[in-house]
Image (cartoon, rainbow, N blue to C red):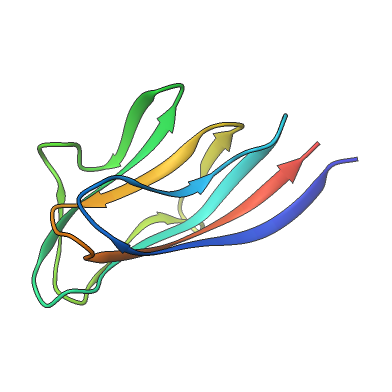
Length: 116
């Protein structure tokens, strides 16, 4: 019988290198991402990108390497809003976040993990 578990994955001080904020891991596991928020923790505007990595391929939810989303000082951006949309990840898929400024953003990812 499948089990369902709600989880929150949190990351602080994300910068110019892609940081994995959530990974769906476990044989046959699926995750429904029901919320993803990225917050600028600096005094200046930053640019962010958010992507799904699947089998070494990148699928951008926000931005891409040369065209990113602007995030104002102290502002936050809801990338996935469970009331409007959801993202399904399969075993081994992950969500990465990065910005154009070192230690500049935090993220919270909420998901429902479904384990067979």
